[in-house]
Image 1: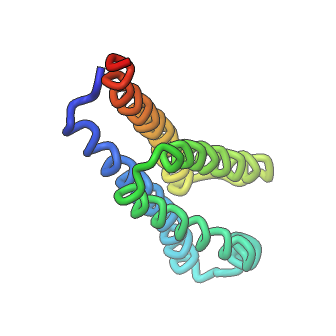
Image 2: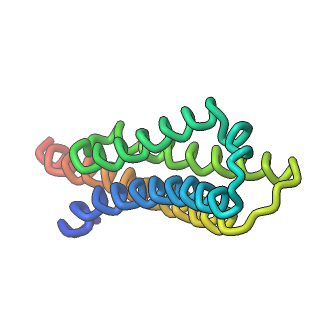
Length: 152
């Protein structure tokens, strides 16, 4: 059964929106940390977290999220759909491991914990949407082959 035309065209928009939403969670974590430090007038925490390497990782992550969201609107090939599924999975697992690492260090979460939870939920939703998008490609390929098979 082939999905309706509207469903096939809205999948890339959903994927793009989820990558954008993940980008916004990253910005919210940085913004809340900066505001907290400004209120306390103590920016010493930034030496260790995120630190220079962490800031580079953050910038790379932000760039990848926005790039993938944009690419989802233009690249709809099966390989890109599977890559999207893989990258949503890795993004979710990376952030989960990052949060578990902080919890093991004894960090207490406030607002950033809620934003991290939002990141986990958005990643899980991204995996589910990407899986559905991959299955659409399979169904469309199968539908394209049926007339050829009938002719033989």
